[in-house]
Length: 284
Length: 273
Image 1 (cartoon, rainbow over the protein chains, first blue to last red):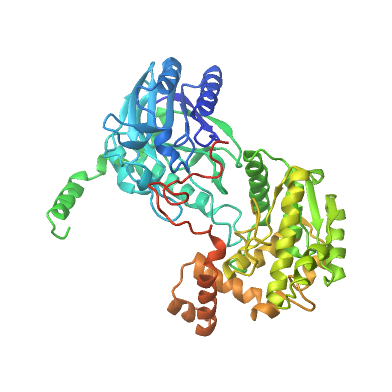
Image 2 (tube, each protein chain N blue to C red):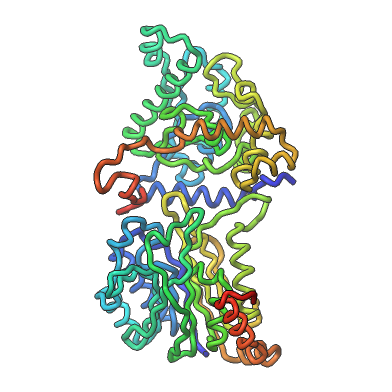
C-alpha cells in the first residue's frame, strides 16, 4: 500500500449527472496530471444527495456509458465514485464503484442506510448485504459509505479481511452550532470516529465528504486522511470544494502493527461463537 | 456560558455561504427584505450585505401611519451603516383602503393586514429589483407561531430561521448591528406600545431556554419539570407550538390521484438547478 492519493471534495449539482460527470472528468485529469494514483470522490458524487423522487430517475447500471467513460480514465489513476446504482433486478442502491485499469474492479452497496431525523434513505434505496475488501494494484482497500462507518462491525470486517486503507465516502450534513463550539457537532463526532478507526483498525482512513447546500442543508466537507496510528495526516479546511493530495505508505502500516499487533491478537473466533449463540437465541 | 451560545464567526460563514449558494441555485444574486428597525431584519440585512455586496441588497421600509417613527430611524441608521439600497413604501393607503372601508377594528386582524400588505410590497419589488425576498423570522418566533401567515413569515429563503433569539443577538453584535437596535425591546410595532414579550406573556430568554430543551434536546414534560421549568409554562408552550403548526407547513391538498404534490411527488426546490 504505497500510493499518492487525492481526495476530491466536490459540490455536485443535484440530479444533474451530465454536469457532475464533466466535473469528475476534470478532477480525474487534474489529479492524474499532478501524479496522483488514486482519486476518491464523496458519496453519491455523480448525483447529489437529497434526491427524493429523482433517485430512480438518475440511477445508472454498472454498464452505463457514464461509468464506462470514467472507467476509461482509470488506466492511469484508480477512481472511487459515488452513484445511484440500478441493478439487473431493478433494485436501486447507494453505491461506490472502484474503477481501475479501464474496468469496474469493485462495487460496494451501502449497507447501513440512514433513515431517521433528516434522512430517508430506506425509502429510496435497497440495502447492500456485505463488506468485502478487494485488492487494487495499490493494495487492499475496504469501502464504507457514510453511515456504514457508524457501525463498528463494518470497520471490523474490513480489519479482519486485512484492509490497508478504508475509503469512507460521505454526504454528511453539518449541524450543531450551540455550546459555543468553534467546530460543528457533526465534525466533532466524525473526527472522533475516523481517528478511532485508524487507531483500532490500524489502517489508513480516507474520508471524502462533500460540500455545498441542498434546500437549506449544507454538507460540511472536512475531508481528511487518518494514519494507522489514529492521527490526522492531512485535512481540507473550510467548507469549499477542494483537493487533498496525500501519500499513503506501507511503512506506517508496518510500524503501527509492530508496535501494537491488534490484528494478530484479535479473537474473531470468540466473536463468532458469541454471535452464534445470539443467532440461536441464547444469551451471548 | 449559555448552552445556546454560538461561535459567531462560524455561523456567519455558514449563513453567508447559504445566501450566496441558494440564491445562485435559484438563478439570483440579489436580495430584497423589509427592514423594520428591529434586530432580526437588521441581522439579515447585514448577512445579505456580507454575502452579496451591499449594492445587491434592497432594504424596504414600510411604515403604517401609526408606526413608531423610531422604527424608520433605526432602519435608516442600519442601511447607512451597511451601505445597502433603501426604499420607503408607505402602506397606509393600501392597508386603510381595506381596513377603513370595511371597518376592521380588531387589533390582530389589523396587524395581519399590515403584515400582508408588506408582503405584497416585497414580492412586487423583488421583480423590479431582480432579487429574492429574504425572510427575517427567527426560530423562537417560528416555533411559537408568533407571525402572520403569508405576511412577515413569507419569504423565498431565510438565513436565521434556525437561530433562537439569544443567538440572533449574539450574531448581531458580531456583525456590527448598531447599538440602538440591539438595546431596544423587540416589537412588531403593529400598535402603539406593543412589545413582543408583553404580548407573549413571557421573556425571550425563558422561551429560548424551554424551546431548546423541548425541541432540540427532546426532553419530555417530566424531564423539563425536573430541569426547573414550571409545568404551566411547559404546557402552555407545548400547546402553542402544536396549535400553530399550520403556519409551518404548506397548505393541505386533498389526495385523489396516484401521485399528489408533496405526498408522493417529492422533489427539492433545488431540483433542476
